[in-house]
Every structure is written in structure tokens, then in C-alpha cells.
Image 1: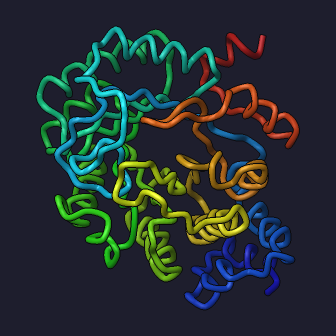
Image 2 (image 1 turned 90 degrees about the vertical axis):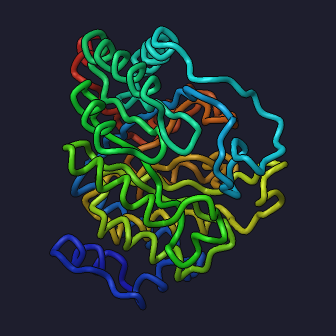
Length: 332
């Protein structure tokens, strides 16, 4: 396969075939750099060498009634995690300041649970209004299944993006959770879109899905027109249903990132949870396909030191994409 030629065809409007998609996931390891060169051809066309940084604040930890098999916060998990109710507006603002100071452009407010309460939405809305005024950050909310009136309130407050991952293919969904449906997740993304909030939705790779499932979820996210696509790689946490599952290796993870770039050429592809564990020393190569990463810690697992990520970007010759207020501070 001539990966540069395929990349150029994608830039010219081609939607890759299932055969080509399987060729990406089955690419011989000896040709991996050629595949990534093709992915970078697409990535560079739309995003140059800029990288978007994202940071999470875990606004509510544990106490979730859902039974998602990958999650340490679920009702069926016995994982030893810190549990606490929804944090205050002041704590969210402290997190936003940390994000600003760490050159993070998108601050992600994430909470466990099936969906937000009226109070949760109010606290987030009040915090977002101040975040916009003080720091000018892009804000992504991830609060679970969303109702119309909640989406309208979040939009009015200034929430830029709403995250609700599809996680896996429709076919594989019931293996991961039965407490909500695949359609519930799609509907939440559509509600966010209807209210003018940028849709963020992605996948978790490594949950005993097939390669066909990986291709299907990449195509489903294209059909959903998600603006931002976080690609997570399973970090199997002791005490969860998927404890002990380890099907991934760094080279396959890179092929998955390339697949998502070839199928969703114009979108923000973000290397998300589990990258440190699953990509290991090959993390820098992932940015030849992806154009965005999380820095700092995740929900209940630790990330790597931000300085390590800054060094990776510097060594690659890539540039952090700053928000205007950050430009004033860090570019002077």
C-alpha cells in the first residue's frame, strides 16, 4: 500500500474502503513509519505542527449507578479510588487557573454519574462564566446523559464543547455496559449539537473488540460529525470488569491513531487516557497522526509530568496552540 497516495486521495475527498481500513490496522510493523508518514500528510494539511492541550478536572468521583466495565467509578467496580460529591465552583476555578498556567487551551469539567442534576448544571454554568471572563479557555463539559434544557443552559453559560464518548461499536456496546444503550450516547451528542455545542465523542480501544469494531467506531464518529475525537487506550484498573485485559501493544495503538486520522481527516484527534501505559516510549510518534493530547492526571489514574509532554513537543518541533489570553502571557 502506498500510504502517501492514499493520504492524498483522502485529502481529495476519498472515504477509505473497509479493505483499506483493515490494511491500516494490519500494516506490517516494518512499514509503520510509512503509514505514519501518510497520516502526518493529512494531519499537517489541516493542523500544521500545532498541538492542542487538554486538562481534566474530576468534578465528582465515584458513586455512579452505571455498570461500565472499564470504569473504576462504576457501580460494579471494587477499585480503590477517592470518592467525593460534586465539587464547588471555586474548586473548578482553581482547576481552570492550573490549566491556564500549564498552557492548556481546553479545560474539561468531568463528573461521574448517569447525568447531571439541576444543581450540577448550575455550578458548572456559574464556573464557566467566570472561566471565560478570567482565562478565556475553551471549556468542555462531560456530565453524562444530557437533557435539552440542560444543554441550553450550558450553552448559554459559554460551554464550548460537550463530551460523551460512544466508547465502542454498537455491536460491542452491550459487552461493555447494559445500564444504558448505545442510542442513549448518540442521542446525547445530538442534543449537544442541536443547541450549538461542539460535539466531542470518542472511543476506548482494547476492550476485547475486533478490528471490525474499531473500524465501525471510527466510521460512526465520522457519521456523528464529532469535532473532537478522543482515542483512549484501555488502562485496565484492578477491581473493574476488564481487570487484567491487556490486548494492546504500542505499534497497534499507532495504527489505530492512523486509522482515525484517515477516516476523520479534518477532525481533532486526541490521544487520551491510557497513552502512557499503552504507547510507552512511542508516545511521540502518535502525534504524527493525532493533533491533541491530555496533560496531567486523568479521572482516577495518573498521567505523566507535564514537563515530559512539553519536552516531547519541543523535541518533535511541534508548537502548543495557545488561546488568545495565553498568547499575551506566554508569547511576550
